[in-house]
Amino acid sequence: MRIRNFAAAALLASLSLAPLAADAGEKVNVLILKEHGVGSSASAQEYVDKLIAHVAQQNGWTAAEGKYQTSRRMAKTWIGEQDPHYGILSLAAFLDLRAANKLEVIGSAEVSGGGGRQYFVVSASETTLAGCKGKTLGTDHGDDTKFINGVVGKQDFKLADFEVVDTRRPMKTIKDAARGEVACALIDDAQEASMAKAGGEGLKVVWRSKELPPMVVVAFPSAPAAEKKTFSSKLAKVCSGEGAKACKEVGLSSLSATSEKTYAGVISDYGG
Image 1 (cartoon, rainbow, N blue to C red):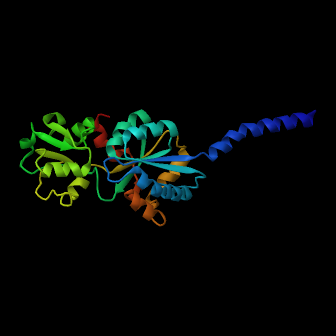
Image 2 (cartoon, rainbow, N blue to C red; image 1 turned 30 degrees about the vertical axis):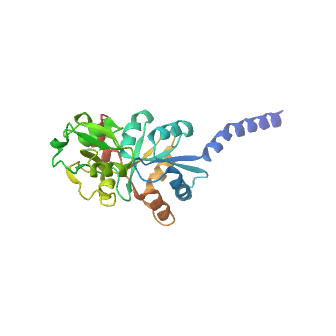
């Protein structure tokens, strides 16, 4: 009888421990959401796969999968379906997703070629921001009114000050402004650096924003504390060694650990 009871107890103990073993091998999903960039999600995905494999090896994850998105709408769907542990997000997307997804800032991500660190109003005909107000403003950033008004324009302008024209594509914004199809254009630093290539040699910068923080590395609530601590401590090594080429192809130049304090100003400007 004692032997039978002992065997039963051992069986119950093994069953109770089984979920812990499964959790230890849980797949770690990582979202990379880079908005308003050039190129497609499909072309970047193979390099994301290589990058996440490199990160998984660094952190001892038994299974991991990364997803590259350029659409916030698609990213929200993927988050709901895949329950990721981590994300590397454009600043505007982070501010939008932060509260609803209880995101924790654990790092910053510098991107190669700029994009989202600073914004400019340019024009071929106007010489001041005041001269642009009331006229057409071409931009592919006008779909996020709260971010542009609160974080970018702040006290200087609101999108309602202009007749906003959705140019949809980054280079089309510059071309439309250069041809005079719109009086002025709101562009980011990546677009400003590419003005000459896009035929915008004659465009003048009539306004510039303050420099904003870089893309954000976040942890979702599903990330275990110990795993999160290890991942954060190894961020600076992600884009080195075997990860250097994959980072470059995805558009990342470096990652580093940081806290929400780095983003406190823009969080406040956005409205918490």
